[in-house]
Image (cartoon, rainbow, N blue to C red):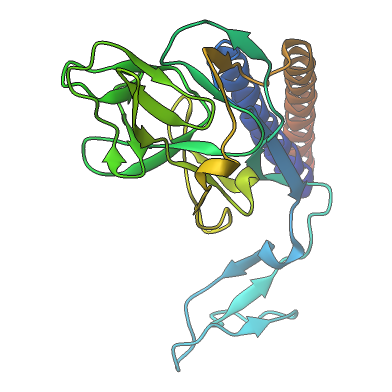
Length: 271
């Protein structure tokens, strides 16, 4: 009886997370460089279905099977819960978004693989596909969120140059002269990059360490932006499915709760 409660509750938690992930994707449908995240759930592993009591005299936790004795020290095996599931992870889709021409001299879109390298005021390094850059009052190249854009020599600086543009190979051209090259990197497993902000990402152990691309390997589309790869129709369908599954799990939970109450009332009577 109670396993039905656990299964229904776990399904509600999974669908709630799926709804949140989908809502975040839809909220960033117009964010340049945003890449949607896809939730992944899995069945509840059997190994987690146990109850840990106090450690034994030697400090270890022993695995004990039925019959159980009063006051034992170790781990009770409860059994499996094959009908339940949990949210395993979310991974990033690496599908490229559509290009939108802006003709802005400091806009650039990466063609193919790669991520721009940016840095915050505390020196933390992040990565982004959004090439919506602008000029700071200090004469530095920054993102629309104010993060410093990094080149081969650190933060890109062009001082008081009158005209600044980005070339097709990532060159920073100030007053007709190349002063730096944008630092573009790739990852062994970019799907495991962690979302750190609206369009910023950070490396994880699973994504692997970043590897810088050589200037001849960088291909940019100047005066254009890569838009998000979110498909509104797909996300709306996923949101409706999550909502319906949540409602069904909620009704199942209430049904099991009512049956449990009836069982307690029936067997709790004294004749």
